[in-house]
Amino acid sequence: MDMTWNFSSERELRHAHCHMTGNHMDYFAESRTEDLYASIDIVIDKIERQLRRHKEVVKDHLHRQGRHLKKAA
Image (cartoon, rainbow, N blue to C red; front, side, top):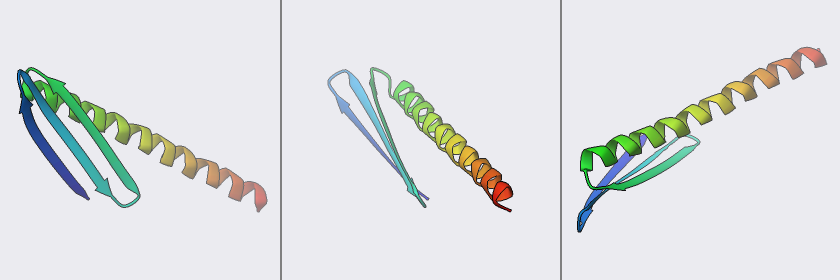
């Protein structure tokens, strides 16, 4: 798993960018606020949301495969 953070400042806005890659996953989030720590919190929330969605998809996919295998047998 690899995670890259980029921070920048433009006038009054603070930018936070996060790019997370790994086996079969690629997530990206960014935020612009006046407070850098608020931007970081927003980015973390966005990444967590993407991870939760991915987990639900994988979990549902595994359960569906199990049902198909039982019916075929």
